[in-house]
Length: 218
Image 1: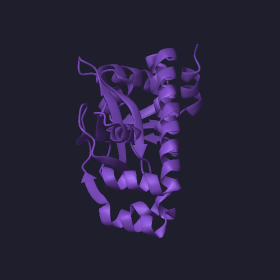
Image 2 (image 1 turned 90 degrees about the vertical axis):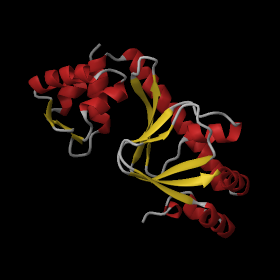
Image 3 (image 1 turned 120 degrees about the vertical axis):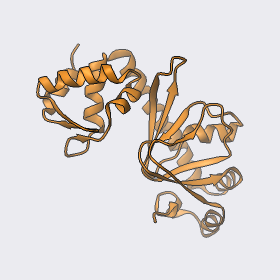
């Protein structure tokens, strides 16, 4: 099983830091799509993804979801860190995108490591910086792109190197803050142009240049 110590910067902790980590670390496993954190929840520690992926999202009064950012393997949730250090309630919702294994560091343990280990302080600062850039990119996309451009960009930026995106239409809709019916209509347009091929739960990119042209439309 993958251990937190295999990820930087935990692999470079001092001997005493690694001992504290082994004594206080808690591993958790979440099935796909299972909710993990809720808006208004009290946060009692720091969460690090060992395997899988988490989606942090907002929820409008009408029930529409919109992805704020993803947390991939080796990353942590900055909202949880902010809530932990500032004694705030969690400001969003979190669910597993796939079967996910987490390392949970209780608050007292993470605060001790933060105080004693420079690499943990560096991790926290870098995590905050990364989130700012991710959120700025999402905001820019929401305000400057049409929905078909945002869908094309989602396909281009989240597909595998083989051009495959394993997301259902509903998951795409959640990410874009729209409905499955709208995503289905836009995908049909892309299919008609031979830009993508759709299968159950998977979209395959057939024409990268075509999707890029959609994104660059003024």
